[in-house]
Length: 420
Ligand SMILES: *Cc1c(COP(=O)(O)O)cnc(C)c1O
Image (tube, rainbow, N blue to C red; front, top):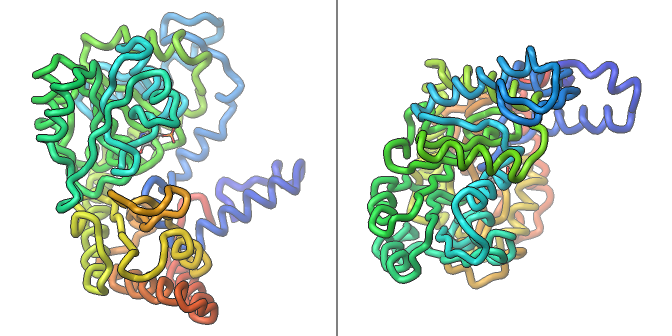
């Protein structure tokens, strides 16, 4: 049953109540390997489901456009202070509604329409909001895109530097959504310095690993850091922008009144709770275990002949090219989902297939690590993935069903925050 219990919801709206219950059960029964997802604590769920959602508070603590901020101001101040202390930054804005608006605020703060902005191309693992064509950021600004080397699958800083010198972007984004390797923040910083660009580290995927000391921090290299709060950081859907003091005013003005109205106070409170959790020794251990699980899973998958982009992982994320398995990403992901293993199909670098029907799948270990799975269990997961991918090619539904049962049995031994 969903925890906290939703007796009022179920009584008032049995359709939605029943669907939320069904989603909670689904999350409980499946092996959730979507690299951007996690399970938040019941404390975070309670904060995000609180009466704080009733309150408007445009502005910032101490400078609001609405009355009645006696409680909201200390909540937002706590969130800001916890972000500053956890990441060791001079300034934090905790109001962006999500990662995409946070990145948009960066454009508003530092660029004029048509200005060049550099980021990793979407097919190489970058995010839409780093200047990709179909995004507003690529339509209203001139996106300059770097990729990865075909032989290594890794960013080539020489290419980044050449492109930077040629195009003189005012902002350079590093980070992305499908990068299985450590991001070289000092390397990017040196290039940004050379052309006087603002380096923005978008740490959405790896924020929890950085907070827990399992990935190097961009602080001291990137003056501006954007992040979602709901991936490895294990908070509610939301985002933050962190920066040095020099960029604080421009970023705050860009978020409000530049882009947004009232902050989502229930989310701000939940972010504060998650940041407090992320400052504990338990969370440090969690972050390191996420990486240990990913490395163990990568090794087991490689051992079964899967082609991993870059050959492995340094973080929570694994990108698999399924070409040699004779099955595309989408049918594989769909078969795996039927087998109780949830991940997403994904382009791989230099993918000859279309983005809606690409060659690869992407997986991550943030959520299963929260459930308590350990490196010893990764060979079992790899075996199921191997079998299910084979079964996808052979249309072998009996095998898929058998795996789904085994997955349910395994996961029933691991508690899920949000389920009792
Ligand atoms: C997830 C993500 C975002 C966008 O976050 P949303 O909350 O989905 O808008 C931006 N940048 C990166 C690198 C991400 O991984």
